[in-house]
Image 1 (cartoon, rainbow, N blue to C red):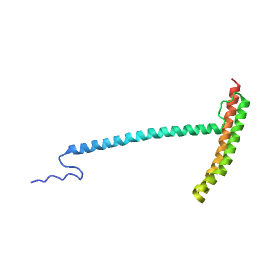
Image 2: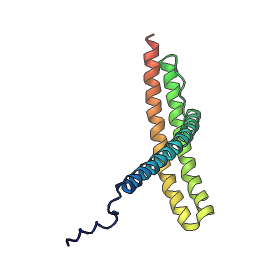
Image 3: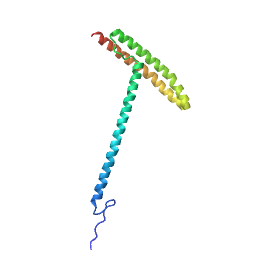
Image 4: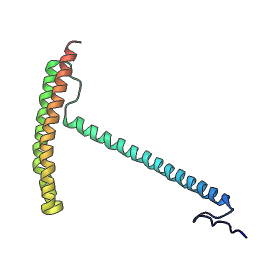
Length: 144
């Protein structure tokens, strides 16, 4: 008598329906995981939008972003933005290391110093950019 070859490991001989059901259950699990990710991503998107709104509000409070009516109003708005950016940068340079030292000791101080220095550079540069933009807007609005 001839012997039939053994089925490969993991496959039951003569019952192909069990393979199909395993594939279908795997597809269902994948669909469930994808749906959960969609729900999480919608919640994450909503949280990001809320955070973005808060950041935008803070930015508008720090820098003058109102539409200037003419060149002089644009220049005034630009100077205010540069001054506020510089002041906020200097305050950050002092405050960040102090807060870091209180919460994390020497390591926190060094982290705070690094973020303070970065903020001390970034905020005045942002103020200059916003200021230049405001001057440009004011000059453009003068022509209207």
